[in-house]
Figure 1: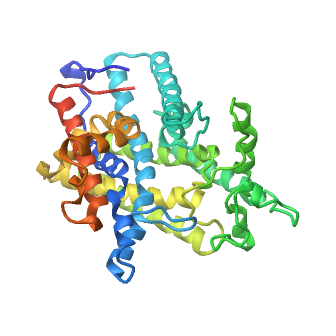
Figure 2: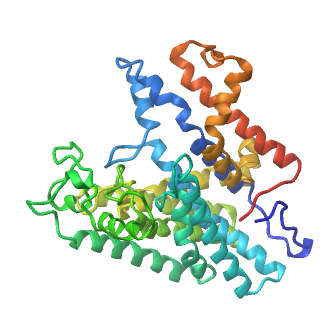
Figure 3: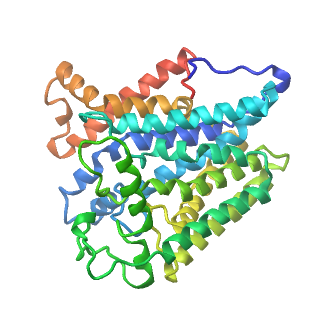
Amino acid sequence: MSSTPNKLPPSHAIPRLVSLDAYRGFTMLAMVSSALGLPHIAKQFPESEFWQEVGRQFEHVEWVGCSLWDLIQPSFMFIVGVSMAFSYAAREARGDSYGQMFRHALGRAVVLTLLGVFLRSDGRGETYWTLEDVLSQIGLGYVFLFLLWGRGAIVQFAAAAVILIGYWALFATWPLPGADFDYQAAGVDPNWEHNLTGFAAHWNKNTNPAHFFDVWLLNLFPRSKPFLYNGGGYQTLSFIPSLATMIFGLLAGELLRSNRSAGQKIAILLVAVVAGLASGWALDHFGYCPIVKRIWTPSWALFSTGWALLFLALFYLVIDVWKFQWWAWPGVIVGMNSIAIYVAKEAADGWIHKTLQTHLGPDVFKLFGETYEPLAQRLAVLVVLWLMCWWMYRRRIFIRI
Protein backbone atom coordinates (compact mmCIF):
# COMPACT_ATOMS: atom_id res chain seq x y z
CA MET A 1 0.00 0.00 0.00
CA SER A 2 1.14 3.57 -0.60
CA SER A 3 0.02 6.89 0.79
CA THR A 4 0.93 9.05 -2.21
CA PRO A 5 -0.42 8.98 -5.75
CA ASN A 6 1.77 7.76 -8.59
CA LYS A 7 2.76 10.62 -10.88
CA LEU A 8 3.25 9.91 -14.57
CA PRO A 9 5.48 11.96 -16.80
CA PRO A 10 3.28 14.47 -18.68
CA SER A 11 3.94 12.81 -22.04
CA HIS A 12 2.70 9.47 -20.74
CA ALA A 13 -0.22 10.70 -18.65
CA ILE A 14 -3.43 8.70 -18.91
CA PRO A 15 -6.44 11.07 -18.76
CA ARG A 16 -8.42 10.64 -15.54
CA LEU A 17 -12.19 10.51 -15.73
CA VAL A 18 -13.71 12.86 -13.19
CA SER A 19 -17.03 11.09 -13.76
CA LEU A 20 -15.53 7.76 -12.69
CA ASP A 21 -14.21 9.22 -9.44
CA ALA A 22 -17.59 10.85 -8.81
CA TYR A 23 -19.53 7.66 -9.53
CA ARG A 24 -17.23 5.68 -7.25
CA GLY A 25 -17.45 8.32 -4.55
CA PHE A 26 -21.23 8.62 -4.47
CA THR A 27 -21.47 4.82 -4.52
CA MET A 28 -19.19 4.65 -1.49
CA LEU A 29 -21.13 7.38 0.30
CA ALA A 30 -24.27 5.31 -0.18
CA MET A 31 -22.47 2.14 0.95
CA VAL A 32 -21.24 3.66 4.22
CA SER A 33 -24.42 5.63 4.99
CA SER A 34 -26.30 2.66 6.52
CA ALA A 35 -29.27 3.78 4.40
CA LEU A 36 -29.39 6.98 6.51
CA GLY A 37 -31.64 5.12 8.92
CA LEU A 38 -34.56 5.60 6.52
CA PRO A 39 -35.96 2.04 6.85
CA HIS A 40 -36.21 2.58 10.64
CA ILE A 41 -38.08 5.84 10.11
CA ALA A 42 -40.40 4.20 7.59
CA LYS A 43 -41.54 1.77 10.27
CA GLN A 44 -42.91 4.74 12.22
CA PHE A 45 -45.29 5.55 9.36
CA PRO A 46 -46.97 2.24 8.45
CA GLU A 47 -49.91 4.02 6.81
CA SER A 48 -47.78 6.23 4.58
CA GLU A 49 -47.28 4.87 1.04
CA PHE A 50 -44.40 7.31 0.56
CA TRP A 51 -42.47 6.15 3.62
CA GLN A 52 -43.17 2.49 2.92
CA GLU A 53 -41.72 2.88 -0.57
CA VAL A 54 -38.70 4.71 0.85
CA GLY A 55 -38.22 1.85 3.31
CA ARG A 56 -38.39 -0.73 0.51
CA GLN A 57 -35.91 1.11 -1.70
CA PHE A 58 -33.35 1.57 1.09
CA GLU A 59 -33.28 -2.07 2.19
CA HIS A 60 -32.06 -5.19 0.45
CA VAL A 61 -34.89 -7.33 -0.91
CA GLU A 62 -35.28 -10.58 0.99
CA TRP A 63 -34.65 -12.76 -2.06
CA VAL A 64 -36.05 -12.20 -5.57
CA GLY A 65 -36.21 -8.69 -6.98
CA CYS A 66 -34.27 -5.45 -6.85
CA SER A 67 -34.30 -2.27 -4.80
CA LEU A 68 -32.22 0.88 -5.14
CA TRP A 69 -30.11 -0.32 -2.21
CA ASP A 70 -29.31 -3.58 -4.00
CA LEU A 71 -27.56 -1.64 -6.77
CA ILE A 72 -24.73 -0.35 -4.57
CA GLN A 73 -22.52 -3.45 -4.54
CA PRO A 74 -22.83 -4.21 -8.27
CA SER A 75 -22.04 -0.57 -9.01
CA PHE A 76 -18.87 -0.79 -6.93
CA MET A 77 -17.79 -4.07 -8.53
CA PHE A 78 -18.58 -2.73 -12.00
CA ILE A 79 -16.43 0.34 -11.23
CA VAL A 80 -13.53 -1.96 -10.30
CA GLY A 81 -13.57 -3.19 -13.90
CA VAL A 82 -13.85 0.30 -15.37
CA SER A 83 -10.97 1.49 -13.18
CA MET A 84 -8.74 -1.40 -14.23
CA ALA A 85 -8.91 -0.27 -17.84
CA PHE A 86 -7.37 3.05 -16.81
CA SER A 87 -5.06 2.06 -13.96
CA TYR A 88 -3.13 -0.66 -15.78
CA ALA A 89 -2.91 1.45 -18.93
CA ALA A 90 -1.27 4.07 -16.70
CA ARG A 91 1.14 1.48 -15.28
CA GLU A 92 1.99 0.25 -18.75
CA ALA A 93 2.61 3.83 -19.94
CA ARG A 94 4.88 4.34 -16.94
CA GLY A 95 6.99 1.41 -18.07
CA ASP A 96 5.80 -1.42 -15.81
CA SER A 97 6.30 -4.86 -17.32
CA TYR A 98 3.47 -7.39 -17.57
CA GLY A 99 5.11 -9.40 -14.81
CA GLN A 100 5.22 -6.39 -12.51
CA MET A 101 1.56 -5.66 -13.18
CA PHE A 102 0.59 -9.29 -12.62
CA ARG A 103 2.39 -9.33 -9.28
CA HIS A 104 0.60 -6.11 -8.32
CA ALA A 105 -2.77 -7.63 -9.28
CA LEU A 106 -1.99 -10.79 -7.31
CA GLY A 107 -0.94 -8.80 -4.25
CA ARG A 108 -4.03 -6.61 -4.48
CA ALA A 109 -6.24 -9.68 -4.72
CA VAL A 110 -4.72 -11.21 -1.57
CA VAL A 111 -4.94 -7.95 0.40
CA LEU A 112 -8.56 -7.30 -0.59
CA THR A 113 -9.61 -10.86 0.23
CA LEU A 114 -7.96 -10.82 3.66
CA LEU A 115 -9.10 -7.27 4.39
CA GLY A 116 -12.67 -8.45 3.92
CA VAL A 117 -12.05 -11.26 6.42
CA PHE A 118 -10.41 -8.82 8.84
CA LEU A 119 -13.35 -6.41 8.77
CA ARG A 120 -15.91 -9.19 9.16
CA SER A 121 -13.96 -10.45 12.20
CA ASP A 122 -14.29 -7.13 14.05
CA GLY A 123 -15.93 -7.66 17.44
CA ARG A 124 -15.62 -11.44 17.30
CA GLY A 125 -13.49 -13.65 19.51
CA GLU A 126 -11.69 -15.26 16.59
CA THR A 127 -10.89 -14.79 12.93
CA TYR A 128 -14.22 -15.08 11.16
CA TRP A 129 -13.42 -16.93 7.98
CA THR A 130 -16.11 -15.92 5.55
CA LEU A 131 -15.64 -14.73 1.98
CA GLU A 132 -18.90 -13.11 0.94
CA ASP A 133 -17.83 -9.57 1.91
CA VAL A 134 -17.64 -7.20 -1.07
CA LEU A 135 -13.86 -6.74 -0.67
CA SER A 136 -13.26 -10.49 -0.50
CA GLN A 137 -15.48 -11.05 -3.51
CA ILE A 138 -13.49 -8.49 -5.51
CA GLY A 139 -10.24 -10.03 -4.32
CA LEU A 140 -11.24 -13.54 -5.34
CA GLY A 141 -11.99 -12.45 -8.89
CA TYR A 142 -9.34 -9.76 -9.35
CA VAL A 143 -6.52 -11.85 -10.81
CA PHE A 144 -8.89 -13.42 -13.33
CA LEU A 145 -10.06 -9.94 -14.27
CA PHE A 146 -6.46 -8.80 -14.77
CA LEU A 147 -5.75 -11.77 -17.03
CA LEU A 148 -8.52 -10.47 -19.31
CA TRP A 149 -7.20 -6.91 -19.32
CA GLY A 150 -6.00 -5.89 -22.78
CA ARG A 151 -7.32 -9.07 -24.43
CA GLY A 152 -9.86 -7.32 -26.63
CA ALA A 153 -13.61 -6.90 -26.40
CA ILE A 154 -14.48 -10.20 -28.09
CA VAL A 155 -12.39 -12.27 -25.68
CA GLN A 156 -13.65 -10.31 -22.66
CA PHE A 157 -17.30 -10.57 -23.66
CA ALA A 158 -16.91 -14.28 -24.46
CA ALA A 159 -15.36 -14.86 -21.02
CA ALA A 160 -18.29 -13.13 -19.32
CA ALA A 161 -20.77 -15.17 -21.36
CA VAL A 162 -19.04 -18.47 -20.52
CA ILE A 163 -19.01 -17.55 -16.83
CA LEU A 164 -22.70 -16.68 -16.70
CA ILE A 165 -23.87 -19.62 -18.80
CA GLY A 166 -21.67 -22.06 -16.89
CA TYR A 167 -22.81 -20.75 -13.50
CA TRP A 168 -26.43 -20.93 -14.63
CA ALA A 169 -25.91 -24.54 -15.73
CA LEU A 170 -24.35 -25.48 -12.38
CA PHE A 171 -27.45 -24.33 -10.50
CA ALA A 172 -29.94 -25.53 -13.11
CA THR A 173 -28.61 -29.10 -13.05
CA TRP A 174 -28.04 -29.32 -9.30
CA PRO A 175 -30.55 -31.78 -7.73
CA LEU A 176 -33.38 -30.20 -5.78
CA PRO A 177 -33.67 -31.11 -2.07
CA GLY A 178 -35.28 -34.46 -1.38
CA ALA A 179 -38.17 -35.09 0.96
CA ASP A 180 -35.75 -35.84 3.79
CA PHE A 181 -33.77 -32.58 3.44
CA ASP A 182 -33.20 -30.85 6.80
CA TYR A 183 -34.21 -27.26 6.03
CA GLN A 184 -33.66 -26.18 9.62
CA ALA A 185 -30.02 -27.31 9.50
CA ALA A 186 -29.60 -25.04 6.47
CA GLY A 187 -31.24 -22.09 8.19
CA VAL A 188 -34.30 -22.13 5.94
CA ASP A 189 -37.95 -22.09 6.89
CA PRO A 190 -39.63 -24.52 4.46
CA ASN A 191 -42.74 -22.31 4.65
CA TRP A 192 -40.82 -19.08 3.94
CA GLU A 193 -42.85 -16.94 1.57
CA HIS A 194 -39.83 -16.35 -0.65
CA ASN A 195 -39.16 -20.03 -1.38
CA LEU A 196 -39.41 -20.55 -5.13
CA THR A 197 -41.16 -23.46 -6.80
CA GLY A 198 -40.76 -25.27 -10.08
CA PHE A 199 -37.58 -24.73 -12.10
CA ALA A 200 -36.82 -21.53 -10.18
CA ALA A 201 -36.39 -23.64 -7.00
CA HIS A 202 -32.85 -24.37 -8.18
CA TRP A 203 -31.99 -20.87 -6.93
CA ASN A 204 -33.55 -21.11 -3.48
CA LYS A 205 -31.78 -20.02 -0.33
CA ASN A 206 -29.17 -22.45 1.08
CA THR A 207 -30.33 -25.40 -1.00
CA ASN A 208 -28.10 -24.59 -3.96
CA PRO A 209 -24.60 -25.82 -4.91
CA ALA A 210 -22.89 -22.64 -3.66
CA HIS A 211 -24.25 -23.29 -0.15
CA PHE A 212 -22.90 -26.85 -0.07
CA PHE A 213 -19.55 -25.60 -1.36
CA ASP A 214 -19.33 -23.18 1.57
CA VAL A 215 -20.24 -25.88 4.09
CA TRP A 216 -17.21 -27.78 2.77
CA LEU A 217 -14.81 -24.85 2.23
CA LEU A 218 -15.40 -22.71 5.30
CA ASN A 219 -15.09 -25.67 7.64
CA LEU A 220 -11.53 -26.17 6.41
CA PHE A 221 -10.59 -22.99 8.30
CA PRO A 222 -10.08 -23.00 12.08
CA ARG A 223 -13.32 -22.06 13.85
CA SER A 224 -14.80 -22.71 17.27
CA LYS A 225 -18.12 -23.83 15.82
CA PRO A 226 -18.78 -25.62 12.52
CA PHE A 227 -20.07 -23.46 9.70
CA LEU A 228 -23.63 -24.59 8.92
CA TYR A 229 -25.08 -21.84 6.72
CA ASN A 230 -25.09 -18.14 5.96
CA GLY A 231 -28.20 -16.57 7.44
CA GLY A 232 -28.65 -14.18 4.53
CA GLY A 233 -27.99 -16.78 1.87
CA TYR A 234 -24.76 -15.10 0.70
CA GLN A 235 -22.15 -17.44 -0.76
CA THR A 236 -18.44 -17.48 -1.58
CA LEU A 237 -18.98 -18.72 -5.14
CA SER A 238 -20.87 -15.53 -5.96
CA PHE A 239 -17.47 -14.13 -6.89
CA ILE A 240 -17.75 -16.11 -10.14
CA PRO A 241 -20.82 -14.39 -11.61
CA SER A 242 -19.78 -11.08 -10.01
CA LEU A 243 -16.54 -11.46 -11.96
CA ALA A 244 -18.73 -11.13 -15.05
CA THR A 245 -19.99 -7.84 -13.62
CA MET A 246 -16.39 -6.63 -13.32
CA ILE A 247 -15.63 -7.82 -16.86
CA PHE A 248 -18.53 -5.76 -18.18
CA GLY A 249 -17.02 -2.83 -16.30
CA LEU A 250 -13.65 -3.54 -17.95
CA LEU A 251 -15.36 -3.48 -21.34
CA ALA A 252 -16.98 -0.15 -20.49
CA GLY A 253 -13.65 1.24 -19.31
CA GLU A 254 -11.91 0.23 -22.54
CA LEU A 255 -14.73 1.89 -24.46
CA LEU A 256 -14.27 5.15 -22.57
CA ARG A 257 -10.51 4.99 -23.18
CA SER A 258 -10.99 4.48 -26.91
CA ASN A 259 -10.70 7.13 -29.61
CA ARG A 260 -14.42 7.07 -30.36
CA SER A 261 -16.31 10.33 -30.05
CA ALA A 262 -18.19 11.10 -26.85
CA GLY A 263 -21.48 10.69 -28.70
CA GLN A 264 -20.50 7.22 -29.94
CA LYS A 265 -19.39 6.16 -26.48
CA ILE A 266 -22.68 7.26 -24.91
CA ALA A 267 -24.70 5.60 -27.68
CA ILE A 268 -22.89 2.28 -27.18
CA LEU A 269 -23.32 2.51 -23.40
CA LEU A 270 -27.07 3.15 -23.78
CA VAL A 271 -27.47 0.19 -26.16
CA ALA A 272 -25.68 -1.94 -23.55
CA VAL A 273 -28.01 -0.53 -20.87
CA VAL A 274 -31.06 -1.76 -22.77
CA ALA A 275 -29.42 -5.13 -23.48
CA GLY A 276 -28.50 -5.68 -19.83
CA LEU A 277 -31.84 -4.64 -18.36
CA ALA A 278 -33.89 -6.47 -20.98
CA SER A 279 -31.95 -9.74 -20.87
CA GLY A 280 -31.88 -9.85 -17.07
CA TRP A 281 -35.60 -9.06 -16.84
CA ALA A 282 -36.50 -11.61 -19.52
CA LEU A 283 -34.58 -14.43 -17.84
CA ASP A 284 -36.48 -13.72 -14.63
CA HIS A 285 -39.88 -13.05 -16.20
CA PHE A 286 -39.94 -16.17 -18.34
CA GLY A 287 -38.76 -18.43 -15.51
CA TYR A 288 -35.27 -19.30 -16.73
CA CYS A 289 -33.35 -17.67 -13.89
CA PRO A 290 -34.70 -15.47 -11.06
CA ILE A 291 -33.11 -12.12 -10.25
CA VAL A 292 -31.46 -12.73 -6.86
CA LYS A 293 -28.73 -10.38 -5.73
CA ARG A 294 -27.77 -12.40 -2.64
CA ILE A 295 -26.44 -15.29 -4.75
CA TRP A 296 -25.64 -13.13 -7.80
CA THR A 297 -27.66 -15.12 -10.28
CA PRO A 298 -26.70 -14.61 -13.95
CA SER A 299 -29.94 -12.70 -14.52
CA TRP A 300 -28.97 -10.40 -11.63
CA ALA A 301 -25.50 -9.90 -13.11
CA LEU A 302 -27.06 -8.75 -16.39
CA PHE A 303 -29.86 -6.68 -14.85
CA SER A 304 -27.65 -4.88 -12.33
CA THR A 305 -24.98 -4.26 -14.97
CA GLY A 306 -27.63 -2.53 -17.05
CA TRP A 307 -28.25 -0.11 -14.19
CA ALA A 308 -24.52 0.38 -13.57
CA LEU A 309 -24.01 1.19 -17.26
CA LEU A 310 -26.82 3.73 -17.08
CA PHE A 311 -25.29 5.43 -14.04
CA LEU A 312 -21.88 5.50 -15.74
CA ALA A 313 -23.33 6.94 -18.95
CA LEU A 314 -25.13 9.70 -17.04
CA PHE A 315 -22.08 10.60 -14.93
CA TYR A 316 -19.88 10.62 -18.04
CA LEU A 317 -22.30 12.74 -20.05
CA VAL A 318 -22.92 15.33 -17.36
CA ILE A 319 -19.42 15.57 -15.87
CA ASP A 320 -16.94 14.80 -18.65
CA VAL A 321 -18.89 15.78 -21.77
CA TRP A 322 -21.02 18.70 -20.60
CA LYS A 323 -18.37 19.69 -18.01
CA PHE A 324 -21.07 20.30 -15.41
CA GLN A 325 -18.81 19.34 -12.52
CA TRP A 326 -19.21 21.59 -9.49
CA TRP A 327 -21.89 19.43 -7.87
CA ALA A 328 -19.76 16.28 -8.10
CA TRP A 329 -16.82 17.36 -5.91
CA PRO A 330 -18.14 15.73 -2.68
CA GLY A 331 -18.20 12.42 -4.55
CA VAL A 332 -14.84 12.96 -6.23
CA ILE A 333 -13.16 13.52 -2.86
CA VAL A 334 -14.51 10.20 -1.58
CA GLY A 335 -13.86 8.43 -4.88
CA MET A 336 -10.16 9.19 -4.54
CA ASN A 337 -10.09 7.34 -1.18
CA SER A 338 -12.81 4.72 -1.50
CA ILE A 339 -10.93 2.00 0.40
CA ALA A 340 -10.12 4.40 3.24
CA ILE A 341 -13.73 5.43 3.84
CA TYR A 342 -14.97 1.83 3.63
CA VAL A 343 -12.44 0.59 6.20
CA ALA A 344 -13.07 3.59 8.46
CA LYS A 345 -16.80 2.95 8.42
CA GLU A 346 -16.45 -0.75 9.17
CA ALA A 347 -13.87 -0.22 11.91
CA ALA A 348 -14.94 3.05 13.54
CA ASP A 349 -18.67 3.51 12.89
CA GLY A 350 -19.72 2.80 16.46
CA TRP A 351 -16.82 4.77 17.92
CA ILE A 352 -17.75 7.88 15.91
CA HIS A 353 -21.37 7.59 17.03
CA LYS A 354 -20.48 7.26 20.71
CA THR A 355 -17.82 9.98 20.58
CA LEU A 356 -20.27 12.48 19.10
CA GLN A 357 -22.71 11.71 21.91
CA THR A 358 -19.95 12.02 24.51
CA HIS A 359 -18.94 15.51 23.41
CA LEU A 360 -22.24 16.89 22.09
CA GLY A 361 -24.63 15.25 24.54
CA PRO A 362 -26.57 11.97 24.62
CA ASP A 363 -29.60 13.59 22.95
CA VAL A 364 -27.68 15.30 20.16
CA PHE A 365 -29.34 13.14 17.50
CA LYS A 366 -32.83 13.94 18.78
CA LEU A 367 -32.64 17.50 17.48
CA PHE A 368 -35.59 16.83 15.15
CA GLY A 369 -37.36 14.42 17.49
CA GLU A 370 -36.98 10.74 18.27
CA THR A 371 -38.66 9.72 15.03
CA TYR A 372 -35.84 11.17 12.94
CA GLU A 373 -33.04 10.25 15.34
CA PRO A 374 -31.68 7.46 13.05
CA LEU A 375 -31.42 9.92 10.15
CA ALA A 376 -29.59 12.52 12.25
CA GLN A 377 -27.20 9.91 13.62
CA ARG A 378 -26.32 8.44 10.24
CA LEU A 379 -25.91 11.87 8.66
CA ALA A 380 -23.56 12.95 11.46
CA VAL A 381 -21.38 9.84 11.07
CA LEU A 382 -21.41 10.27 7.30
CA VAL A 383 -20.25 13.88 7.61
CA VAL A 384 -17.36 12.80 9.86
CA LEU A 385 -16.31 10.13 7.37
CA TRP A 386 -16.51 12.60 4.49
CA LEU A 387 -14.47 15.18 6.40
CA MET A 388 -11.80 12.51 6.90
CA CYS A 389 -11.65 12.01 3.12
CA TRP A 390 -11.62 15.77 2.56
CA TRP A 391 -8.69 16.16 4.99
CA MET A 392 -6.79 13.41 3.17
CA TYR A 393 -7.62 14.93 -0.20
CA ARG A 394 -6.36 18.38 0.84
CA ARG A 395 -3.06 16.82 1.92
CA ARG A 396 -2.78 14.63 -1.18
CA ILE A 397 -2.97 11.43 0.84
CA PHE A 398 -4.50 8.64 -1.20
CA ILE A 399 -4.66 5.08 0.10
CA ARG A 400 -3.95 2.60 -2.66
CA ILE A 401 -3.73 -1.16 -2.61
